[in-house]
Length: 287
Ligand code: AMP
Ligand code: FE
Ligand code: FE
Ligand code: ZN
Image (cartoon, rainbow, N blue to C red; front, side, top):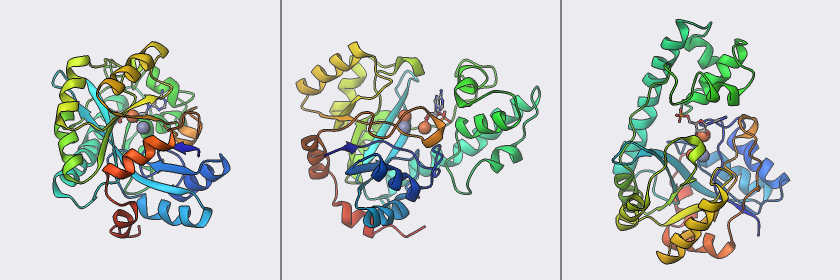
């Protein structure tokens, strides 16, 4: 079984529609793919339909941007939860909406020095998409300011750039509790990806476990090799699920579908702890 539990469609900052992403998963030889767009579930219905057509099992998920008490960014994957559960739904919506004003604020700063506008960003974004820096990067590319998303993130959109503006994100422990309340399984995404910025220490891992954390995304390209060893040991010591995933963003990142995989027994643990996939998808309106 080839299982990839972390991918993004153009409902957030990936470049393929949810249905095309599932077809790409089939072509990449995957048996199971989780759709985990940032702060939205709007791709679930069409991904599930494409999964039925192409024989790929689709696991519904979401990646929430959260913060540690010291302000370190923590990405929390949530699997197989009730999207109508009010607490989680409200936090995802609040983040989704905060990202719009935050995107506009970044563009306003950039527009003082570069030929970009909010209209140009929207030209590169499907309606209803979770807006992020990648969409601003695409506008900068089309304006000829940078060559690709990577260059934009290394320079103008970096967290230390004067053009950078943060957005609202809930506390990570709150997110973990809300994901469990919604019947889902919280998995800490790329937990020691230090190339992305500051990472948290063991004390924060302990707090997340106490709050109900279900697993760690150990096998992800952004976790350095030594970190993967530490994470594996920590997961075993705390009986956490271990996942591996690509974090595919279509053409938006070099990450390829299936470049890291999750073992079948670990997927089983997620499916045992979470709600029924079929029941969750039945409750989602097609969009
Ligand atoms: P934001 O959530 O708006 O702060 O933007 C962060 C998102 O940008 C993450 O979800 C990443 O997928 C994406 N990202 C981060 N670094 C890069 C990069 N170097 N190239 C392309 N996308 C990136
Ligand atoms: Fe992303
Ligand atoms: Fe992430
Ligand atoms: Zn991701």
